Every structure is written in structure tokens, then in C-alpha cells.
Image (tube, rainbow, N blue to C red; front, side):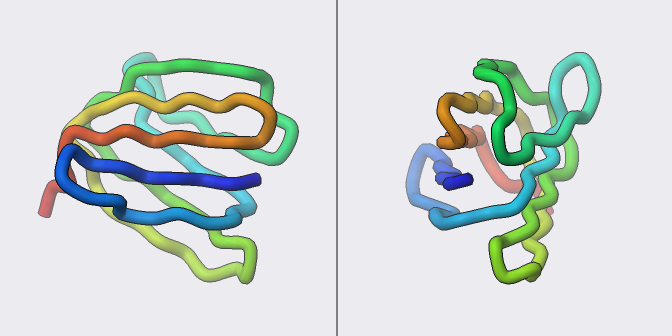
Amino acid sequence: MNLVVLSPDKEIFAGAVKSVQVPGSDGSFQLLQGHAAIVASLREGAVNIVKENGDSLNFNVSGGFVECLNNEVSLLISGIKG
């Protein structure tokens, strides 16, 4: 599964991942290979990414949107907190 994380001013991450956990407006959820198509808004909270090599990337966002379609995930965030 491929992920791109974008903020208004730069690309935060792009590459192959095993999973992405995001703070959805109605609760946190995880995206894995083969996830159904979805577009969802994000609230303030933690994003946890497990890269293809097993390394983790964790950061807090102030909100945004996530889209998943055909194992391509776009995470559009309004900013990173802390």
C-alpha cells in the first residue's frame, strides 16, 4: 500500500507502508492493504504509520482528511502539533 502525507506547505512522507492509523472524526481507525475505498475527516490526534520495512513514524495532527482508493492512501493534514 502506498501513502503520501501532505501539509499545506510540504510533503511530510511518501512511500510504501504496512498500515496507517488515523484519528477519524468519529474515532480512530486503521488502514491496511485492501481497505475499502473511503474518504474521512480527521480530528486532532495521533497518526501512526508502520513502514514496509517495519519502522514506525508517529506524529500528532491538528486535523485534515484521509482518502483510500485501490491501496493508495492520501493523508492531507492541516498541520503537525508538537
